[in-house]
Image (cartoon, rainbow, N blue to C red; front, side, top):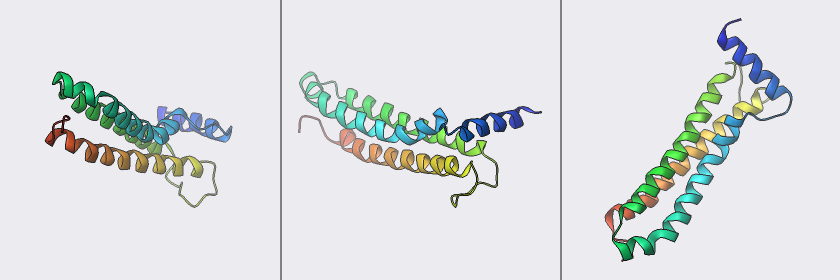
Length: 130
């Protein structure tokens, strides 16, 4: 059995047992986590950036949170490619639920990464002291 066939068999046992693979969980929560961290840390450190003049702190937060969201998209894409080609969003096989979760996780992460970029643009244009 080749490596891909063994990997498919392992994911089949995991999904069949009713356990969602860790990669699917990460793709579902990474976007939410990244946006929450971006909003929370940016709000918390805005006064610090203003008082010390270290504006780069807000830029670093935005970039790191964007990368967290993209890591969730990448993980979702890897999980999506693991499943057989006959899976769909319509249901019917044991891989269909996981297929839908992978698509949903990728959509969430991509959407939240766009929101993070949109929220970071003012940090690049305006001073945090305004």
